Every structure is written in C-alpha cells, then in structure tokens.
Image (cartoon, rainbow, N blue to C red; front, side, top):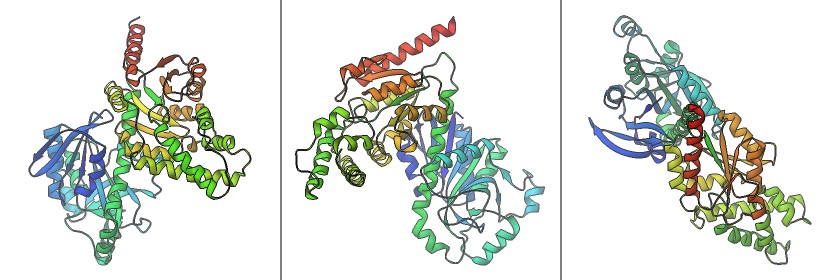
Length: 466
C-alpha cells in the first residue's frame, strides 16, 4: 500500500486522525477538504465527505482519480443492529450493501453485485490492530448496511435485521464500497457503535458519538503503524536497519527535569505519613536510574513493607505524570529532528522502557511522538524485569531481524547484545563511563545517528554488491 485514502463523513470522525498526520498540503474539491500528508512514512489522504451516500461516492471517486489512492478506509460511527453488538463495540466490515436499494436492482443492474466484499488484507490488518490496541472494547466482523437515513425506529431496525442480517447501519459505507469495487480498489469500513438504531438512538448518539469516532480512529492509527512496519521490514538488503529501538528516560526524555521535583514530592508525602525522616535520596536514585521501579523502591526503601513501596510507587507515578502534563519536563535536543530523518530513510522507531505504561503514554502524548514512533513498549507488558526480553518481544511482534538499541544505561546495552543487535550508548546525563565502554558505538548527540545510519546503509550496499 503506497497511498491510503481515509474517509469520515463528519469532522469528529477525522479529528483524531488529523492530529497524527504530518500535513503537507490541503485542497478543497467540490466543497470537500482533502488533507495530504504522511504518517510514519506512509502517504495518507484524509477527507471529510459529508453525510450520505452520494457525498461519500463523490468523495471516494475523487480520492481514486485525483489522488491515485490504492486503498480506501472508511471510518466513523454507526447504529448497532445485531443483538450482540452494543454501544462502544467496533465492527469491521466483511461486506457492505445498500439497504435502500432493492436486491433485484443491485443484482440485475451495473455493477451486478448484491454486496461489496471488503479487502481481506485490510480486514486482517484491522483485526491485528484491534488485538494490539490498548482499547478494551469488543470487536465484531460482519455485514454493514447503508442508506440515506439515520435509523432511529425500532420497526425499521427489525426490518433491516430480517432482510440483511447486518451488524450495524450507517449512511456512507456501501457507497464507498460500491465505488471502490467498480474501480478495483481495496476498501474497508470500520465503525464504532454510537447507538442502537432504535427509538432511543438520537439520545444515545448525542452522548457517545465523539467517543465512538475516536475509538475507530485509534484502530486506524494502529493499522497504519502495522502497515508502516510491514513496509519497512520488506525493504531490500541494501537498505538501512529495519528499526531503532530507543530507551526513554535519559535518552529521549530529560528525566532530571522532573525527577528531583517528583521524588521530593513523594518523600515529602512519606514524611507527612511519618514513614521517612531524612533527606530525599536523589543521589541514590541517580545511581540506579534505568532499572524497573519495583527495584528502585527496593533500593530506596529497603526497610519498608511491600505495601508501602507499592503505595509510594503509585504516588511517584502520579507526580511524574502531573509534572509532564504541566510542561516541566523536556525532550533532549534534536529528538524530533532525528526521528524525522530516521523515518525519511525507511527505518521504524520503537520505544522500549523500564517506565510504566501510563508514564510513557504521558510523554508520548504530550510531545506528539506517535507521529514517528510505531509503538511504545513498557516493561509492564511482559512477565520479566529484563529489558532484553522486552526488546525481544518487539522483534518478534514486528519480525525485526536487523536493528539497534539506543540508550544511556547498561540495561539498554545488554538488551541489544542479548538479542544480537547493535548497541548505541548515549553519553547523556545519567550515563556511566564503565557502562558505555560496553556499547558498540557511543554518541554525545542524537544527531550523530545520521552518520551511523548512513554508514550502516553503505556497508549493506557494499555487501549486496559483493
């Protein structure tokens, strides 16, 4: 897939996607806005068609003829029809059809199809995206029906169920599938249920439409990440490394900006509970920086109970996140610049950190790093405190054969070596000379990765020629 078109009928159905897109150009055609840009190396055109099948058909044809897309994804909200489909559930289309056009007309007139089959490849990508997403919602696969009306009548709902056995109903998907079919373009419709398409539909829709639209968008973002990874992993042997796996604290994020502040807050809290009566052990923390937090509290609070350590951990996490969200932290110089260069050179970016998921999400969200990062992995996600195991899980998930781990501590260097990867040490704030001595390469600035990646590329090219 070289260029993907994404259609939402309403602005709320594309807002979240536009936040992720690096927009390069905007065009308005027939009153419809088209946002042309890039997401993690993939060309993406996002557009708002307006509500209804005619608008959707015109929009889909414009994407195909004007922008030469090679696949189309339709996102948005829908009314649930199948008895198992509830508000908040996701529906991935296996096929789409018009519920306000007779079956005989569809069968006997061009293009002589009673239904339009969704791309199996896109269905599989959506399925995988749902499995890997952090969303905790039920997912269904089945028929989606479309018509030029908002279904909010229990009798009409019963009629649609009886005639079409669909999972949900909306007002655009079948038209998009129809246009895609006659142009031989793969398509997929993915919808989140905002209402039950009955007499209470309007009330439910008003309450849940925005949330439902965002659920769909999050799955599409996850799909694009997987497409990006597959694209890069299929590059030729003379290309650069498939991936760079970055540590977060002390490598991308200047943790010291919020570390002392958050640690002081935490130990002041312990003092208020009469659980601590000396100075905050900031120097001790700096010595062990980079290890998982359970090990941190074992070192800092060796005489306290597990319960107290866990409570302290939770309080510390809250303070870290609050300080991140209030802008008291900072990325290291040139993080976004080097990320842009890496992506432009067909290399995927991952984060592997001993930090907790919620903490990492706060950093990635605040600094919009998911424009470049395929996925962020926390040590919480595996049954081990060994960072090498975390890196291995990334390699297995994305079928990575050649990569480098970039980090400032021995745990990062060992994670690379345990998996046969290049170890790039960062001589930043928390780095220790004896640990960096074990890295394959040491850098003082992230922009030095440009030269390293170019050298790797040239080496691969020479090997390929030989």
